Amino acid sequence: MILNFRNVYLDNASTVCGPYEAKGPLSKNFDKKYTDDLYCKERSFEKAEIRLLEDSIKILLKKTKLTPKDIDLVISGDLLNQITSSCYGALNLKSPFLGIYTACATSIEGMLIASTFIDSGKVNNALISCSSHNMSSEKQFRNPTEYGSPKPMTATFTATGGASVLLSNKPSKIRVVNGLIGTIVDYNQKDAFNMGAAMAGAAADTLYKYLSETNTKASDYDLILTGDLGKYGKEILKELMLSEYNIDLSKNYNDCGTMLYDLEKQKEVMAGGSGPVCSALVNYSTIIKGLMKNKYKKVLLIATGALFSPTMLFQKMNILSIANLICLEAI
Amino acid sequence: MTNKKYDYLVKKHTPKEDKVKYALIAFLVGGLLGLLGETLIRVYIMLFDISRNDASTYMIVTFIFFASLFTALGFFDKWVSKAKAGLLIPITGFAHSMTSSALDYKNEGPIYGVGSNVFKLAGSVIFYGVVSAWFFGLVRYLWEVLV
Image (tube, rainbow over all chains, first blue to last red; front, top):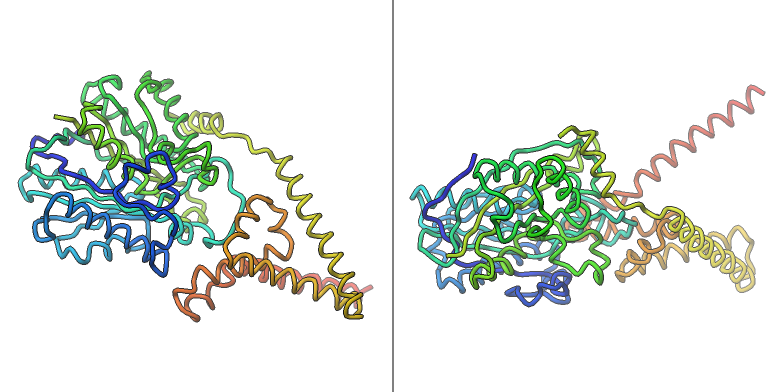
């Protein structure tokens, strides 16, 4: 079901990144960079992630000239158990807090919830943030951080950073047009090193539903962006859309995971970036700037999340996935 | 879309890993490590005038020490991933797995952190090592008693 919004605007956004993202092609667009230290001046990777999220909130408040008291609602999510980075990171705001989780689809989920709250008149504004950290995710989901096991080419690299965005009912240059909450899909995927394959199906499902329900074509949008399918997942989605639904994505489609890093030079990222902050870093910096400068008129942002749990995978269950979509328009 | 068709698409867009190349790298690195080990044994025999058995133990301890040190210094993981299984299968891989686990959990303290997580990866190796040693010991014992 399409969620239509009449009175929701994107005020501003902030991005903070780690060393690998700072070496990437979008580096100049980020507000703050920790260029040489994955610990971000903290004593553990988990604390570093909290700091990244906290930093992004501070920068956003500064940019929008608001104080914590002015924020009606905070919605935040991340990858760690009990979404710890979000809880600790939002502590100092002392604003009403909603914690959310749909893995790497979190940022758009937050924007959809916030837009619904704002459009219904329950709140005037909402701050949505998310974070991920390459090392804290490795530690939780895979092997110890200093353990070097060979990875296949389809593996993706969790992005390090924190990103926040402020939505409000006060008119600005960018309007939140509508969106679609994704459904959980299961395409029988079991390879934890090929998340792109697990998520491409969810992206296709959401995009097809959105286009058919809004009666629009892919070519009606200046840009269609998926979150973190990576180099190979992107190809799966393109072929799937064409063969199954006859929708051509060859002209105006890209994937944030392949944009955040230079895949040729930064070989350590393998198939590209992933993690909740991967799409947020690209969307909140480059895409929002593009909309503000009227480089794009209308964009579709699809955040894709692999709802992956190592425990369930060891118990022979499939990797589920979900994709949330939001449409932004420059006015 | 059926899962079968989806699987076909995934397979089509999954790059082929060059297993022959990886095996060759692992063979060469592992072999070089073996050569280095043998050289060390001979050097220890000459230097300390000890038996070959003792010298092997010294060699193993040396390897464990350097694998752990290099892990702690933060570059051994890059070597391991480049060398494929070449550094992972020998004793260096075992030491690497323990040190990396210990490093990861140092912030959670000596008991709930390092102590309970140091065998996170190596635990399986030790457990199945002990189980198979017991099993083969039993087979050998029965063989000697019955035959």
